[in-house]
Structures are given as C-alpha cells and as structure tokens.
Length: 410
Image 1: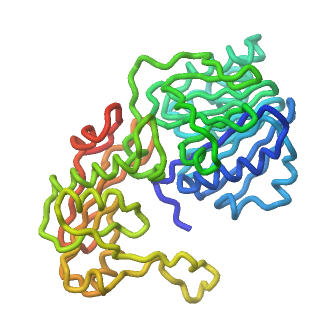
Image 2: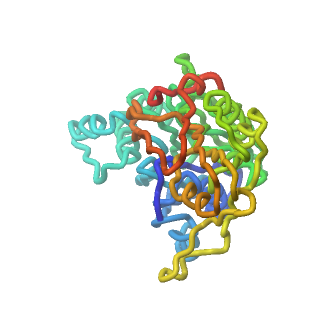
C-alpha cells in the first residue's frame, strides 16, 4: 500500500446525549474519511472518566477487528483518527484523551518545556505533548477549560484537535484555520466533529457549522459553547485541502470542493490551452476538474478509464492494475488528461491504446517550498511521458476562493 502526501490524516469525534455504541459510529465516520489516511488508525471511547482505546495498522477495515471494537464498550464521549503521512495522533491519559490532526512546528520545544518541569514524553507524537501540557496546567490548579486555553496559546502550526474529559468534549482549530474541522448534530441532541463534512453527510448527520479558525468549542449536556472566540488573524485554509486532500462531496469553510475543482479546470484551460480531440480525467481522480476544462475549452469529455473495482490483492503472483483504459474513446485522438498529479502509468496506458498525443494538465501548482506549518514540498514531477504538461499557477489559486494559504506554491 502506497501512502501519498495528499493523505493528511483526519479525526472524527462525538459527544452523545446518552450511552451508545460509540465505536460503531466512529468506525462509520472514519471510513468516510479513509481517503485522508491509510497508514494507521485508532479509536477511543470514554464512559465517565474511564477511557479505552484500540489502534491498528492500515485502514479501519484492516486494522480494527470485532474483538478490539467490542473491548471499547459503550460511552458518551469518543474520538478516532486515520493517519496519513504522520499527520494524526492520539494520547490517552488517566482521566482524559486527546486526538490531534495536523502538524505542530514547535512540538520539540513543547517537549523541552515539559522536560524542564520533570514531565517526560514517552513518544514523539504531538498529541502526547499537547495532552501532557494540558495535564501540567491542571496540576497547577487550572480548570479543565482554562488549562486547554493556556495550552492552545502555546501551540504553533496547522492543527485541529479534540480533548475528551469525563464531562464534555472540547474541540479547537489553529488560529489560521489551515486544517478544517466541522460540527454536526447527533439524533439524540449530541454533537459530532469531523475533518470533512462528507463524514457527517454519509452518516445522515445534519451539518451545523464549521469550527472557526482559532475557536475553542465545548460540547456537553448544556449544548455547544464557544470558550475562545474566532481568531482575528484571517483565514488561511490550506489550498491543498480543497484541491487534493478533501473528498469531492465535502464543503470546507463554506467552499464546495466539487465546484472549486471545476473552476480550477476552467482556469487550466485558459492558462494551458492545447489542441485536443477529447478531455479525460486521470484515473483515481474526480472528474470535476476535467469537466471544467472541457466546458471552458469546448473539447468533449470522455470516460477514458474504467475502474477494476473488484480486483484485490489476493493474487500477489498475478497483480492487476486498478484501472483499464477505454481504447475506443482515445484511439487515434489527441487526449487532454486532467488530474491532481503527473501519472506516467496513465499516459503509457493511453499511448498503448493508440492515443495520438497525450497532454497532462494538473490542477495543482508545483509546490517546491516546504509548508511553513510542517508539510512536505511537492516538487515538479516531470513530464510523465506526456507530450506537454501544464500546472495551475499559484496566482490562479487565489481566484478560486478567498482566504487560502498557497505559500508553498509557485
């Protein structure tokens, strides 16, 4: 299994109005967020001040078995994560638990601060450092809420987190809003928190609102309460969230992902026009950008690939690719292939079917600079065997939506 740098990790959490099989609901929510991380996963369920956890390697279906899920029991407060490229972690303390998605740029500094107080982290996970910092503030006399306020003021980076306690769930987002986090409503009057709205929609949970950048929210028996108001620093949602990481049916900070990607395809057609006979979507990518390119350019859209959806890894000796090209749609034609990356295999498959030319159009800018919040750069991947390659420019990213961070892009 190949884990990509677009798998940014995700969290799903709930605070219910009554005891329930919270593990099953976490499993459903995380399955709907699986596109954000397939490296590992974990669940935490709390009943009173007792918290039980289980974790596994791979997807939620691969890493968590029925016995592990049954051991979690019932609860009112629960949270889980899927991990991508090191961007999600969890920590269970004696009477609390914390799940964090994203990157802290000062994680090492926090561990040094804790060590100076005689508190030592057993792992390098940011979730442990944050939770121990919160516990340290509690030991100095701060209330649960005030301790988290103090802790959040020390954090630097791009993150969303939830803290589970015996009485409530506390959720927060970094001051620039680089990582998304939204709130939904449970049938019994409780609340769910998710990295993307698709996890709420797929579970039939009404969407309430996004957690604002810098906001700290408490969910308890009294409903929702804002403990820290939104930051006045302005939103800077990571542009890669909308262009690559999020599922097409999600809405992040009021921006519909599918519509934005369609507009990205239209801008690609204006910026990198080419003579073509058909436009097709890259295999494994949503068709929104390709449809936008086709509409803007006037070149007809075709389905050039069919997913081999029932092929699995059972037969290691005879591996099968995940997609087949539709030869009749591309033979003898100039194909404009639109997606979120350079894919040399897809280009080779089209050429093998007799495509006269293949032109790649990538709806992401080249990202040669490391993210200031800790993400890895995504440099130019070359031509991939295509006749031409065109990337959306960073200046056009800012035309797609306001309040996006594109500092890593050119």
